[in-house]
Length: 620
Image (cartoon, rainbow, N blue to C red; front, top):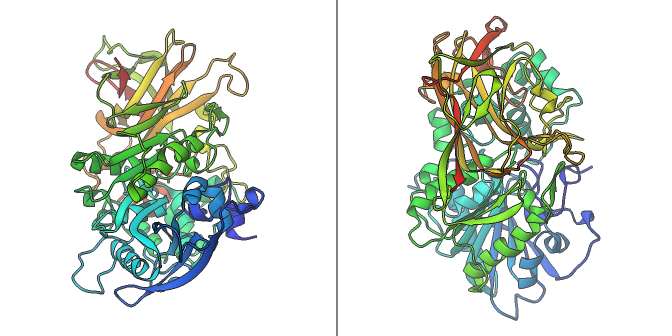
């Protein structure tokens, strides 16, 4: 069975970072094959400035090379293989764009599939002093130069789009942009893989994801997903730390795995790879796209928008945030796991936002009416439009306080200035699983990775090694919008700790099945305590000292309905998605010795002096 057949989940979805094919190359077998619009296919090897040749597949309407209007290019560059691109798959994945008529180009990036050269994961942007100074911006420019000169009857206009790694590559087309590039759409782009995307979140290492992904992209030139039959919870627990797991799989010498093992802090290596520092001007109209329950790249969409928007003098930076997992806007988008949104949100996005965006900027057509941000507000299940994100007009700041006896409410705490709202013992020998066991390989056969963020949290919420804070049953709707920030005052008896905060919508027990009593995560994120003062220079925590940990849980637009409850859950492990914190400070957790892993008591404060809370926006 091909990697593609194993990976495909739904029509038109760029399913995951490593198991997905380009959106132009989705599986036509998912629907009866058809030819609504016939496209011809050709392959070329394009030389770039340092002599390397890059493999591309070009698809265009039959006969358009000789007659009819000159057509713009729509380009997607990918590490996942352009070879599967066909007319049939185009008709399924991009029917509106196909019907309008474009020259679609699928490009293998250097070192992957049919392209020459050496592959470098998220290749950093470099200074361009000579022809040997190459990166994804130069490869994009050189590819476009060749296409403009050698592909007949083109309009001289280029659009670039992609999801995930191809989303990172789409953003590269907007940096030092070729003059022909008139529109880009980075969708769930890998933007900063240390701060909040694929490999680390606020310093906590995404162990299963990093372990599987580097094998797939760096162990060979094409995709072969890791597919262990063992419960990955058991596997990583038995091997103690990442060094032990990597050695057992013989991946310690893969380029990115070596960096994991030797540079777990936010070193120059990770800083150079980050994209947001390069977004100092808006060179082309940009449509950012992301999903509320993106299990891989939630951070990138909002981070790129936040970096670009202050420089947006012409009103050409847009963003769409919807009720999707990673790439879920490529499918119908009516459901995610057990959650029903009541409408085909993915189809609505593609027809009313993505399609008219490219039509406007590549063909001069009317119909694109988005002025700023489109957000699908879950709970009430309706699209909202805002001038900017987070929204300003019509909203006010709110705080939701964690209190004694597991209380949660909007009133600031009173009484004893040192009240401990909750305490629990976190034991690295028995870490809290991030999803229901068994935990399959990320992209392995039968993996439940893709929708895990909407999994019912009742499978862990009764554990004693975490703390829950819950409101009474709501007597009115409560809307949470914007960037949700956790401001946690906490202490540990150890010298290091992880803090996980989850905002959860608790459905009524009498809600229709399967939602009766369901605990749905709305936003959630981890923070590794050693990075309290600096991501670059980790330090030990002073035992039993109260510290303030403040970090983003990312954006939300959700209404907790009357009759529901709001829950905030705090815990200190999320395994094996994140490696175990030994809770004893060591220089490098990747190689932490067994004796460093010790149970510690975690205390969450809720008092006038130490008011642990969440911050967000609500409508006036």
